[in-house]
Amino acid sequence: MSDRPELPPDDKARPLWSLERLRTIRENLPRGSRLEHFPLRRKLKNYSTRDFQADLRAGSNVALLDFPQGMAYALIAGLPFQHGIYASAIAAVVGPLFASSRFLMLGPTNAIAVLSLSAFMGLGFGPDEVLRAMPLLLVMVGLILIAGAFAGAAKLIRYVSRSVVTGYITAAAFLIIGNQLRHVLGYSIPPASTFLEVVRQTVGALSDTRWPSVALAAGALLLYLLLTRHARALPAVALTLAAAAGAHAGMECWFDGWQVRTLDAIAPGHWPLSLPPPDAELIRLLLPVAFAIAFLSVLESSAIAKTLAAQAGDRIDLDQQLLSMGAANLGCAFGSGMPISGSLTRSVLNFTGGARTPASSMVSGAILTVGVLTLGRFIGRIPIPALAVLVIAIGASLIHPRNIRFVLGSTNSDAAVFLTTFVAGLLLPLDTAIYLGAALSIALFLRKASIPQLKEYNFTEEGELAEITRKEQRPRPHIAILHVEGDLFFAASEIFMDQMRRLADDPAIRIFILRLKNARHLDATCAMAIEEFTNFLRASGRDLIVSGARREIHRVVRDSGLLEVLGPGNFFLYTPENPNLSTRSALKRSQQLLGDEEAGIVLLVNRSPNEDRN
Image 1 (cartoon, rainbow, N blue to C red):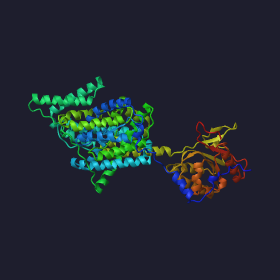
Image 2 (image 1 turned 180 degrees about the horizontal axis):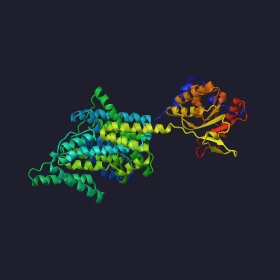
Image 3 (image 1 turned 135 degrees about the vertical axis):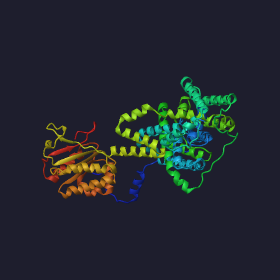
Image 4 (image 1 turned 120 degrees about the horizontal axis):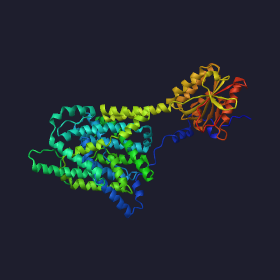
C-alpha cells in the first residue's frame, strides 16, 4: 500500500474551463462589505429620552467648536469662510444616516483643507475657478468613496503605514502656518501650493506688515492659550473670536486709523445651492486630486473611528464609514460645501461629551444650520487676523514631536517613508506627497513580504536538527529538502528562484524536495518559475518533488497545469493527521529516483516556534 495520500474527490483533475471552474473563480473574488443602506434606523430603534438628552448635550458642545473651525478650515482651503460652515452642517446631518461609528464627526478638517488648497494652487486655479470646480470635485470624491465602500476598499489601508500619515500631517501643518501668516501680518500675497513658495513670498512682503493686525492677533492667541490651559470645559475658539470682535469694535471707536480686515457678513437666510459643471477637461484635471482627497479621508477617518470604537468597546465597519463619507461629500457638492472627512477634535469632543448614538451629530448639524441662517450678520464683525492666528494654533497642534521621534527611531523603512512624505510635502503639492509616501510604504511592504527565508539544517546523530554553517558539514548531500516559509506571489518569485538556483549550483544535490507546508499565496508567476526550475533540473538529470502542499496551493498547481509537469508521483499533499507523512513519502520517492536507499539528506528549513520537527 502506497504512503502517498489519495487526492480528495473535489481535487481531482478537471477541465480548465467549465461552469464549476467559473463558479470557483467567482467565489474567490474579493468581496466588499455587506453594507446597510440605512443603519441609523436600527440604532434608533429603542431610542429613549435619556439617549436624546445625552446626544443633545454632546451635539451642542460640538456645534460650538464646529462653527469657528468650519470657518477656519474654509480659509485654509482658500474658500469663502461660509463654505466651511455649510459643509459642517451638511456632513453632520447626512453622514449619520449611513455611518457605523456613533462618535465620528464628519466635516472639514485641517489635512483635507490644506490638501485642497495645495491641489488647486498646483493646478493654477484662481478663486473663481476654485468655486466653479469645487462641486464637481466633491461629486468625484463622493463617488470614489461610495464605490470603494461597495468594493471593500477599507481593507487596503492596512498596507499604508502610519509613517505616511505622520509625514503628511507634519508637512501640512507647516503649510497651514505659512499660508495664514499673511493674514496675521496684515498684508496681501497670493496663497501658495508649497511651503517653500510660502516662505519666499512671506519674506519678500515683510516690509508691508500692519501692526494693528499683529497686535489683535497676539491678543487673540494669548486669550486662546489661557482658555485652553485653564478653562478646557469652555469653547475656547468661539470665546476667543467673540472677544476679538469686541476688542476690534472698541479699537475702532478709540483710535483713529485703526484698520483691520474682517470677515464678510452673511445675509440672513442665505444658503446658495451649487451645481457641478459638466466639463470633461475639468474632470480629467481633478481626478488625481479627487483620489488623493478620498485616500487621505479614508486614512484619517479610519484611524479616528477605530480608536474611539476600541475605547468604547464598539465594533465598526470601515466600509460603512466610506459610504457615510461618500454620501456626505455628495451632499456638500450641491450645498456649496467643501471636502469633508472625520474630525479628530470634534469626534473626541463628541465621545467625551457622552454621545449615545449618531443622532448627536445630527443635533450639531441642526444647530449649525440655524446659526448660519440667523447669525450671519454677526460673523462680519470677526477680525480676520484673530481667526488666522487660531488657525495657526490649530495647525501647530498637528505637529507631534513624540510621534516624529517614534517614527524616526523605529526602523529604517519607517524613517524613509516619513522623510520622503514630509520633504515632498514641503517641496511639492501635498497630493503628490501623499502619493509618493503611500507608494514607498507599499513598495517596502512588498519587499519585506517577498523575501522567503531559507536556512540549511542537517540531522545530528541523535536525530535532532542542527544548522549547517559551512558546506563541509554536509554528509553526502544527495537530497535537499527546501522548507518554504512565507508568501510565494509574483514579487517573491525572482528572489525565491535565485535562492534555489544557488543551491542547484551544487552538483551533489540530485533531488530537491520543495516543502510547501507553510507557503502561502502561490500565484501564476511563482508557479511558472517552479516549472522553469523543474525543467532546468531535469535537463541535468535531476528532479524536483513537492511535499506538504495545502489545498490552496494544490488548487493553483492543478489548475495552472504545473501538476502535469511535475507528475502525480512527484506531488504529495499535506496530511493534517500526520504532518510528516508527505515529507516521508517524498523522501521515499527521492530514494526510488536515485536508486539509493542510503542517500544522505540535507534539510533546508526556516522553522517557526510551532514548527514540527521533521
